[in-house]
Image 1 (cartoon, one colour):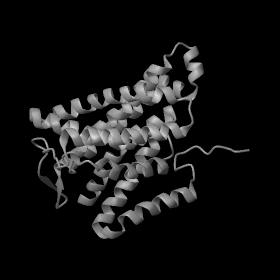
Image 2: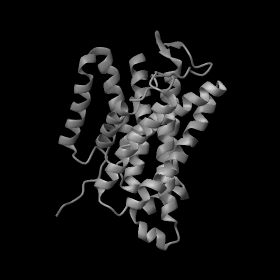
Image 3: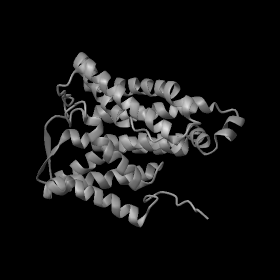
Length: 285
């Protein structure tokens, strides 16, 4: 039972990151290499808020808002001037952002490991089915499920979600109907950055906060997005849970084979469904 909870908690953390990544790609057409660095920055912001005010919950509120502001600034200053350029420019720009954000973190917080204490009431474990299970990991599972529901409802059932989808599908038509497409694009990138900030905050009590934490998780996030289908939120949920369970059970029964098992899942998916499990196959003829 504890292995299942660990797998679900890893899956929900990966979903929070992959959801932002897939939103940005699905609606802006940008593969954001800097998404892992935003996750890292969110973790450091959360650490600073928690250390300054002594409360995890305030960090969970403030860190994503700060990341949303950072994301909005990145979209306006870095990405907006190169939307019409080749994808290579976008890849180079987001890769450059990784270097800038990592150097910023190194200068401000240094190289030593940081951590965030679990909030009161969520430290320790409880006994379920004769198994000790981390209270905080149970919280992560429940919190992630709520975020899944909110994202689905917001994108599929609200007027704002309709505007986002319309701007993504046909920006020129949306602009002709009076929608400020530039503002929508800024909002999408800010939302994706905020989700990275939420992921960084949630990860703080589970994982050490360090300079390279974004690199170690972004590979799994790209695997999740590819497995689920580029730009597909449903696919991000399924892919995140699949990779989370693979890593949890791999750590339990064959730790040395975890990475091989993860890449095997990716390869099998590409062989059977090249567009991803929930991707739309595009006809070439």
